[in-house]
Amino acid sequence: MTDRSRIYIFSPSSAVRDKPAVRRGIARLRALGHEVELDPATFATHMRFAGDDDTRLAAIGRAAASGADIALITRGGYGLTRLLPRLPYKAIAKAVRGGTRFVGLSDFTAFQCAVLAKTGSVTWAGPAVGEDFGVEGEPDDIMQACFEDLSSGQGEGAGWQLPASERVEGFRPFKGLLWGGNLAILATLVGTPWLPKVRGGILFIEDVSEHPYRVERMLTQMLYAGVLQQQKAIVFGQFNNYKLVPHDKGFRMKTVVEWLRTQVKAPVFTGLPFGHVPTKVALPVGAEVHLAVEGRDAFLLWGHRH
Image 1 (cartoon, rainbow, N blue to C red):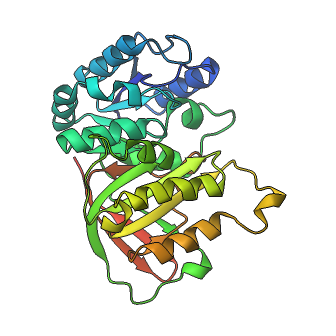
Image 2: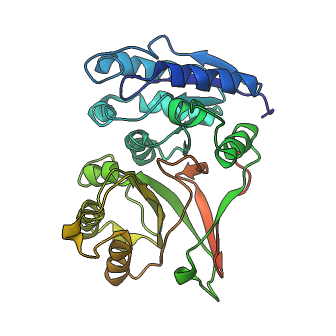
């Protein structure tokens, strides 16, 4: 894959309300040298959705048939879970085999989990056009560098620094299937055919505007369903844009993490730069990766993926 990629932009979830942001994002991608094609329904609107269900399904089908190097969402929101029984799985899997990398986050977690569950295909957790490339001012350097690594096929892994309290010595690296994404979406897929049955995996999670008690409640659902106990590691990405209240009396996100560590034998790490934040890495959902930790330095490594 050359540094110049063909990028197909589509809207599989919520309607684009901030059109200037998406247009800025498109302009920035083109300025980086990419060839950008917009799906005809990119700015479609039906209630809160980017077109009715048939319109968005057709957009997904066109993205799969585009032959693009990258199929990139405009935004998340809500809408994909109602499409899961009708997704064109064979066409999506064929596109992935042909080199198309489906990239997104948030509501796109539903698409990624369902595609992994039904086809075993690898997709990518990464940026969206509007919230990442379309920001006012300059896009985050790390986000942009990780996306460029993805588009050129050069990305081999992601690293971050753990909080001082999580410093680990003598950790033996291990490998597992990397999967996960938005916690609210993952929790809603429990008990359905579209949650991948991953044993010995490395589960990463993130969310936005969810109070820590809601995060814990979703984690209990996944715990009681037997999902969390089957993982080799659980990695917290970014949980942001929530507000603690006096009633919490010390209950916070750290409380949730500490509680989870009492419930599972697998190591639980935090601080992964991924979620609804400017700085985000790109992660191959459904790929086998190595997790390595030395001191406060943590790494997810997958090598070249062409």
